[in-house]
Length: 212
Image (cartoon, rainbow, N blue to C red; front, side, top):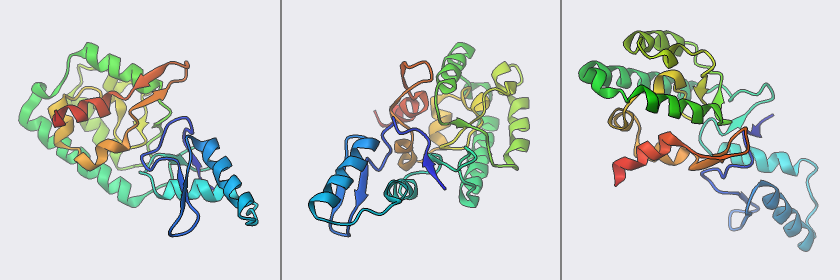
């Protein structure tokens, strides 16, 4: 059974649920969407399925990028396609860094600022990509003077699968070189952190700079 990772963050699809092929109900948020659907059922005298909320959740999970939903264990459902995408992106990042060296890294202060934002994000999660752990060790050697790369408390980004302790060190050009424009919208623009404060996703901001 799947559930949305964080119902306070608007998903890329928006809060919508199709009733028929011709009609989709929209809401201002997760709970509002459920209420709007229930209201539509009531007005049109349509029997309410006992698992309506789960049906809405399943549809949202199916129509949003990997990482926006979790299973009962609290992890993003395993996806071979996602794992392969992680390995491809990791390989491209490695090649890019070999070519550009330290020029691909931001100042350590910026890395720490990025890491602190990620620590507040509900999309930070364990990585289900077993082969990627070996790649992390290689990256760790490449940025061995950066303590964040070895910080085990920095897990992975559920959206892209990147190891956060490594990812926060890369420059904008390096990140844009390995991320397609279609994936930029997969990251939330802003989110409410564990402290209750509103944060802006630094990676989305960096990726969007390439379009300016």
